[in-house]
Image 1 (cartoon, helix red, strand yellow):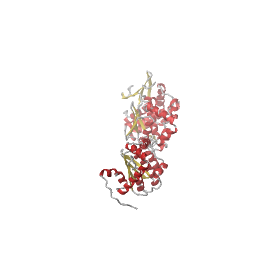
Image 2 (image 1 turned 90 degrees about the vertical axis):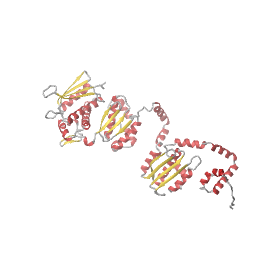
Image 3 (image 1 turned 90 degrees about the horizontal axis):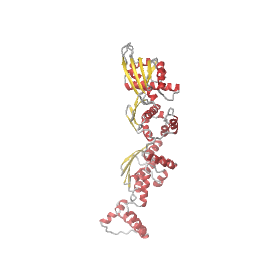
Image 4 (image 1 turned 60 degrees about the horizontal axis):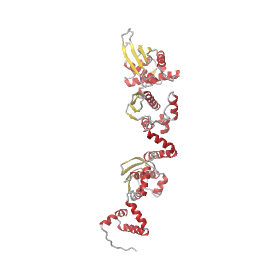
Length: 492
């Protein structure tokens, strides 16, 4: 039997009932019934109510404090599907029912979190925008993870992007393949899952390593054991490819040029090999953070080789702060063939003065490109010689022998000599850069300079002092021709 009675309530008591009135959507009768049920429970165990009120008078009770700590330490981790099923149950089949349940869940005291969901369909959405609003950003992100895992299973939706501030979080979701959904879910919300799992598998190891990195202020380098073994052997360093290919799960040659360059920085900066990379249309600028010139040069060679394995040609320039890798366009890599000029794929032994005669006709002058062609050719020439002669370390004597070998092989008229042990002097008597009239062609001259620079850099690392004197003297003059002076300032 239902009895109707009139009651009088002042504004003060109506304000106290406001949370329950909101819960019952303004229904005063339903609100009063819940108050009576609460009062009945209080009368059954008055002490428990006193303890509850005492806890609620504090901003955070034990339960909420523990939950706050847990959520903060779950940042970057996804709830597994079993947890999501326990939270949401298995009755939700639509976007609207998901929204209703989450709003009821988020209405708990001290954890007010509300959700708004816009979608193009209630049962089979292809896209949705989820907006979570609440005073605890860790709770917002946790609930976003719950929704994302559920939407993946129920609607085949994946996370496109997440953005917002401390009090609000927006998550855009779209339909996609299973592989794409899992990848983006991990990148946006589960980015710490693998790291935490690995740390738990070897806690002793990671405790030592994290403490060491912290004590060293992260001035550490991580390299593979294979590379370290090659480094200790003192020979030619092995290719630094294994870390890259295992981390990204793809062969270097299978990655597009643009993506390859983008992937270099996050991995190699974390490994401690570099500090920063800047990229523009024509060059890659690496902030290396090293102090030894030979080490800087070897690091430049490592990156040039990595880029070459990806099918990209770069010419290195190094200084005490930067490694500048200048791009050489694919269509600008030439060499001689019977039909004229083609890509440089020939053996260095195929070079002769016909190439120099063809250069000014077939290649528009561009100093960087012409010099890079010569540099690349010279470097491959000395690499071939080093392999043939099994040279382990270059010095003045072995380099002079190579220069004389090059003179004989390519029929160049050059005299080389050593001055005071660390200065090499060469006089080009009949310069191949001159045309039939005796006039020096700038394209040929630039190519030859690049060729000698390639040889010198390969043998001694960062370019020593190199002076190219201009074409001097008149025909018949004993001083006619070019002079090249190489000061081996980096020789030990």
